[in-house]
Length: 487
Picture (spheres, rainbow, N blue to C red):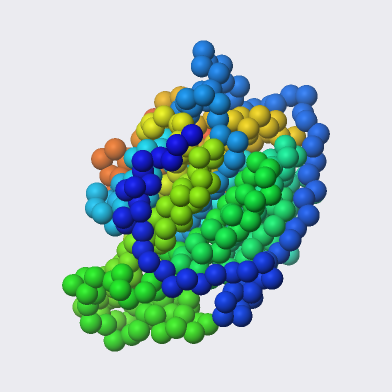
């Protein structure tokens, strides 16, 4: 196959970098440790006699079509996953209507893009579990968290099966480069990788450099491969190099949002606590500056994504490769009274960007509602995997107009928060009894609550969500009973 002409667009936009490299000893040229972890793969290869609910057997006259993914000839032999942490859709050019992310936008123009895609959660651990296994953390029987809950199993069980584990069984070598301490071996979520390179909290420039080196090492082995690069940007502290800030959009403010040091990630949260005591003009300056910092970090990441894409393409790594791009979840910037994620299930935390790309894949737009587990199911179908435990997803594009997707989050000692969404509506609920409904056709930012118990859309969403509420309540008996479940 020939290189995509898209690379010519991206090469012009890619940003120069400082040449930081990593050698095979695990040290970069400055002598810092890369955090390389070699992991053994232990995969249950039993196949089920019944695929069960949640899988989709697709029959098409074209043997190389799965749902919305139509390939010109056989699908690629390799898989590349580019995952991005904590990214709001409305800061991506395609959805914001601006040029903040020209490199990603150029790829999305030539991809199968999921324009109504939801994360199964609103923080990294459960979100990436859904992508890796096709099932929620709850369904897998564990719940990872920084504030360990003695009532819950923290690590995946023995039957936790993942994309890299199954592709390894097919003879595909695999490597993960991750900048997230959550999506790393200590929490067990990226199970099945042969090699994991941790660059915790490292900026996109370093992650791209290490990622390109690891990708070439993987390809040099000669076998079909799976490679994943997981960027932490634009996770708080929102501190991209200042060159990416727009001075006209950054106003005077008495606190330094990016002082450097190990505690830099805590600064925004400390200021969030002080926010209610400030005068209105100082509050507005804070909100303005964190949004500009966030926008700048997304733009900075996009420049490094452009460099990764351009260099990977020039090396031939994209020629026979299916690429999945996905964001794990979004971020709240005081939209509903908080900064961060894992807070509430508004669309700014819950909506995700997802797309499939290959040189022989026909571009398309999927406006049907989708969820992270669909990505796993689609990959399994394309690569011929029948998982021992069925996923909770369906092939992308195979869902009907009445489909409902849902998800959840939980922090130790806090309420369970949940959502359910269909084609046009987004409903949120928590175990304290708060219920809201938004019409995304007229209110895409989900700012106006239209919840009414008799509303047919409310009833339809509860038909999907209520069994999940009941399952959580009956399984996690240490929780107080949910308040006001149902219409």
